[in-house]
Image: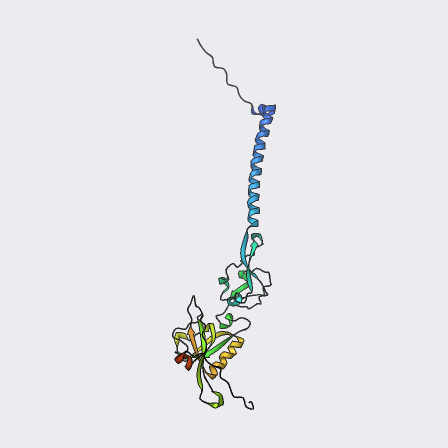
Length: 262
């Protein structure tokens, strides 16, 4: 028996879309596409708002930082602090590491609350003055190779300063040799090149202490004791006399005879 194939029906897309079912299909596809686009938009929006809310830790001026201020001493003087700033408020070149401004000076005034940026600083010349705070002074101490430890001393080291004197006794008697700690943990700004003897060592000291060191250098002898680079600790070192060395006797207070007194 011979069979005949039924002719294939051609789908007219235009007629299909014009029917009620076709219209519903198009609407459903359009709704799906719109939903997908909306989901992508919402995801991108959440990501952007999440990025805006992320904060960065930057350095912010606590007080006025005047033009020419050395970056090496800003931290010691408490001139800036760390602060969390939203990323959308972050300035270009904002500084996050205090080490990055060492050896530089402020190129312009930086006002309290402002972020420190790389544009605010410029390379400074290698001078001892760049390591000084407002009340610090640089004082040159004449030393020899033994008292100044110049063979080992380098700029940036820390030292303790001892003063040796010959204190006159009451009534003009024979003097009493004394050594007394004058300062501890003093920064060496410059040291003799190559450890040469008979040169000057420049120290950083508060103005009052600098005056005392100048007096001690003129009236006695100074010793510079090199401190460890890390983990240095201080003991209770007192005045040293002949009695303390030989007998362990604490130094006594010397009384000076005052003319016209009792």
